[in-house]
Image (cartoon, rainbow, N blue to C red; front, side, top):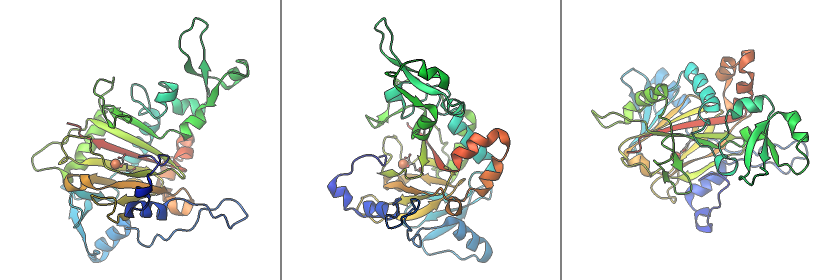
Length: 345
Ligand SMILES: O=C(O)CCC(=O)C(=O)O
Ligand SMILES: [Fe+2]
């Protein structure tokens, strides 16, 4: 489901794939100077921020979009032709965005939570701090024949280990961090939850937040139980290919999906990859709910924007302007984080 995965020739020709190709990042090879992203026509991308503004100012709403209000009075939108899909513009306050960006970088990738690095390097503790301290992950081999293992060491220590020693800097690993899993661990190779893997419960504060956000998409009288979450990390050029999240038992319960950091384009397709998807912007703080019929809809993220004009992270930059937050600011200025929370059973 990640951008690097191969796509078959047939799926290359679907309407979903065409939209992915339309929006994905290409560089302009006609320009001699610095690599420049190719211009892309964004005129068909739904912008719920401006829809909200015109709704508030003049009660005008484009056809097919249904404006609603949560119990707390927060506005959100549904789509007539995609029942079960809700878009909550600015569903997270700036303070919540600040908190969950920090948690996504500091706590969420901590073992026993797994990340995309586990399969190759084993568990890595404190990756974000290690990157800040310019540490390096080195491969250790043991003379007693124990299997090799990777360990974080100070930069200066690397040269003393000799030329043959395999190593990779923590900052490169942080850049290559693509996902971490919280609560019940998702096993990507089997595309299922592996309940036998050690795991911590989803933190209470995140549970509370997810329950509150899930409310507009919940069946009446039922309670959302957050049991697992996938945290996706995107740098410029990273994509999340069209997919379904179909490994949870009860599709009447929503997936609660929160966007943090740089703006992205989200594609919401239909039941088939042949259905032309709707494109919409996802900004920091936006929340998407997918429940019921919407759980059968292909979706993905073909593009994130990291340039000042398009990233739209000014408020976040101010929030992270203290000296002690510099490393978070640096990361989020070129990244997007998505936390999506699920009830598994
Ligand atoms: O990044 C996003 O907004 C969507 C993430 C998603 O669909 C997933 O992880 O299943
Ligand atoms: Fe998904």
